[in-house]
Image (cartoon, rainbow, N blue to C red; front, side, top):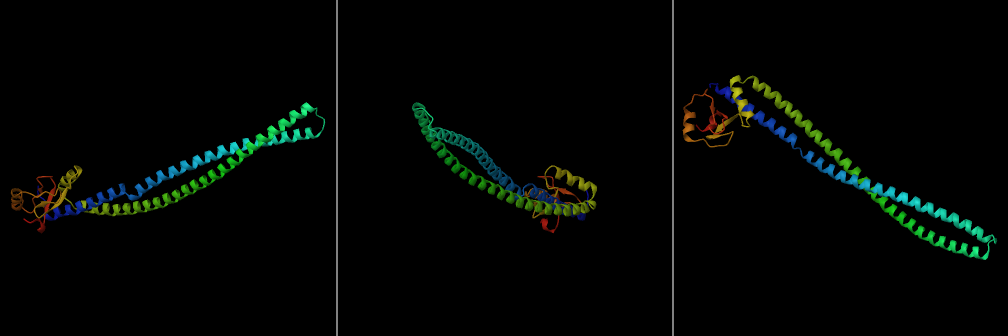
Length: 245
């Protein structure tokens, strides 16, 4: 295939732009902020789990507090009633003894419940502190996520702007490239190769292989408008003063 040396050199501009676009695409997929956000999300979920456990424990303790408090109030009311009956002086000796025994039992039970209530209150204080800590941790992670998201969005915005500039420039370059030459370039690119690269110091700029003497001799003998392709990778080799021919 024939193409002017100038037309072939345009492929180098195109290859550079495609390499830039590939780098932009790679950076878009591998932003450090995305990894940071993923880690922050895991840590925030763990903090939220801690908060949920603390809230559940707080609800359980509140129910236990109300149960014990209700039982203590019931006993206090019973003690007050029995005390009034005891002080009335209307009870027979046997009934009086039984009532005194009941009052003593109520007092002991109430004392035990009051100790249990105090323990529950201490647990509520500890769980409340844990809940506040977990809530503060969640809020802190929310802030960090918002900051990382803003940085990620700013980076994506800049990359998108760079991609738009490069894509526009690529369109301008493509418009000036011979259609047949562009078809070869695009076919090589579609197979994961460079498409076109500089032949520098007898080495292919696409695959990096040093070309053998026989191939170099053939290239040297070729006309400037002859399209030469690497024997190793098929990349179009663009010849310049750097080619060492």
